[in-house]
Amino acid sequence: MEIIKKGKLLHSITYLDVKIVDREGNIIFQRSQIQTPLLLQPFANDDPTMNEKLMMAENDQYFYYINSIGLEYLAAGIWSNNQYKGFVVLGPFLSSIPSNEMISDLISKNKFPVSERKQLQDYYQSLSIIGSNKSTYLGDLLVNMCHHSYIDGKLVSTEVRKSAEKVEKVLYEEDKNLIEERYKAEKKLMRAIEKGDMEEIGRLSKEVKGILDFFDRIPESPFRSAKNLLFVLNTLCRISAEKGGLQPIIIHHVSEKFAILIERAPNLPYLKILASDMINEYCGLVQKHSTRDFSIIVRKAVDYIHSNLEKTLTLKEIAASIHVHPSHLSRKFKQDTGKSIIDYVNQKRVEEAMLHLQTGTAAVTDIALIVGYNDLNYFTRVFKKFTGQTPSQYKKKAEGRFSCF
Image 1 (cartoon, one colour):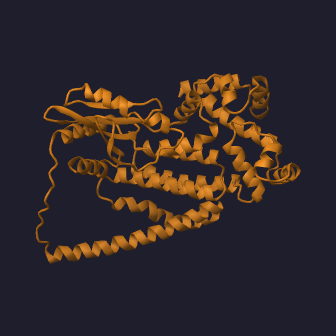
Image 2 (image 1 turned 90 degrees about the horizontal axis):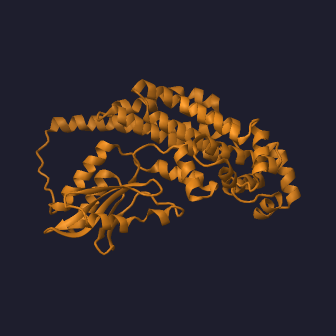
Image 3 (image 1 turned 30 degrees about the vertical axis):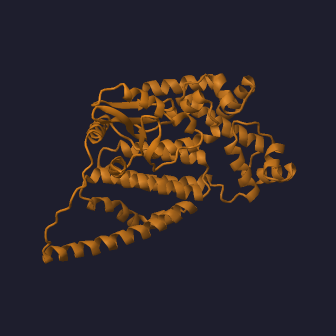
């Protein structure tokens, strides 16, 4: 019961997943906030490695561990009378914002399907970002908690004066009204983004300003609070854009861009400008790229293509997967998108290949296989058709841009 109380306390304070394992490898407590994707689960069980390391460590040492898929953990041994009893582990977390390069390398090194890029990106972006200073403090916390008995704290309260109670009641009513107005404005904003209605976004400008002013009233670290609220706003915009029919690959790019810009923001005025830019960009992209007006069978075909880019994709196979006749699908697809299915597939594969060429370390031959081309010459012809350059030329120019940056 004592160690379980410690596990619950760690989870509630750190907001990280907590696991406590005995020296035989049995899990005696586990509390998780984020479900690890099935794709990553075979790589994420590092209990034996941690157990072995901590069993041989000193009782005042903790273990900082990064596994083969870039997930980071902190662990410390549980000791009683100088006897090793097991360990407690915090994580996974990340020490930096996950980039396109990281996801591309993850896909290429582990031969993951490219259709899982969005799921991987969403998972890694959902993890807590913990800097080196904080990880040191957490390590110290683990060591101290694992060495001392758990003591239930006892609250000692003093009588609150009635005048203070009245002030608190007034502040509560003000905050309640402010929060209600904020959420009403958020709902209007999300509907406008979902519809791609730029005019409505303009009309909502005053209410949007109210949302952005909300974080000025949070007294503890307003700059950090502002960033946190903008991360939430980024997620809400992303969800609305997805409902509005924006393609996942576009959502992926824009959401990652704003996540990085938010974290690197220098001050509060910059964040307010960034929030307005973010809302306008999501709405404009829905207006320009939404598949909302496509027929049901075309949307199904597009979803199937995006989920199976690394596989062989022919008109016949796609039609069979969504239970329509190939001729009917071909006609409707051309009518709705202005492209043939093969051209659409090639375009999406080239877009995915460009991501790998820009930020990944894989060779062109490997990238061709990753995005679904078994023939390098055919991949080169298709890539040049869409970009005007060969993959090698594109990679060289991209490397030059990144090295200059």
